[in-house]
Length: 292
Image 1 (tube, rainbow, N blue to C red):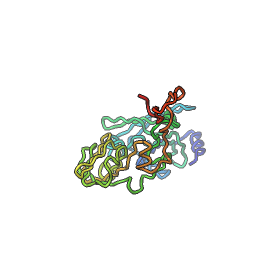
Image 2: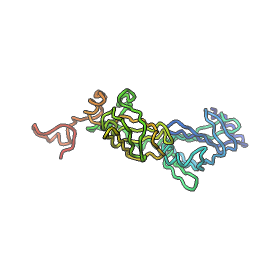
Image 3: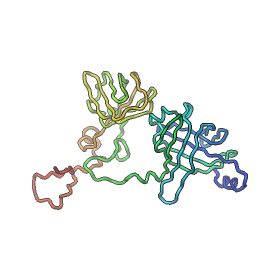
Image 4: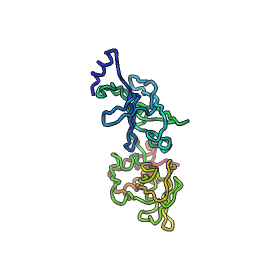
């Protein structure tokens, strides 16, 4: 990639440049678009012409202000479909935008990198907010001193391997309305084992979509799993799903269910806020909980 060659081309006075966008979803699927009249290939992606995707003027600032722009385009089955947007497949997708010399695509410059924000659709078209990298600076970070564990089960802070036997199960759906799922004969795992965990659809039209588990019950050899939100694509009997064990963030659960106490990130014994004014007593618990 040569930025200097692109600069020399722009200084020539007679230019042939176009804009290219690459959208990469969280499931790894990527799409390339260009406003040139022919397809362009670089960086392992084919940027397709005639897709109807365009972008408003890019607003870029110095300092820590958030860059922003907007992408608009047509909804087609071959590129971005309304069903995929409704299902949430493009939520938070990574976006990269280049200015490219179309006669020599190796001469290009990356103008924008960020993610898709709010997406709206109407009349066969969509409009998506593009959020720059500085958007992540709006997210609170840092250690929280609290009774429960702030780590996400399986992440770097937790350190637990969820792929080991006993914590992941693949089941075949017996019936569902998109939010409540039943599985016949799936009693290998204890009731409530998957509560606060995740369900991911493996096959069918909803393959790749996932949801957080709200309830997990067993009755008469039938396992019933309820999600917090409906899967926004058709799931039918016979589809396969993967259920991952959940964690309620308590120290007892970390020790007994996952045998991972050494990585527990909470503070169950932190003194309450009245500790400095406390007097000697055997009745005052020091468990970090609220006082009623």
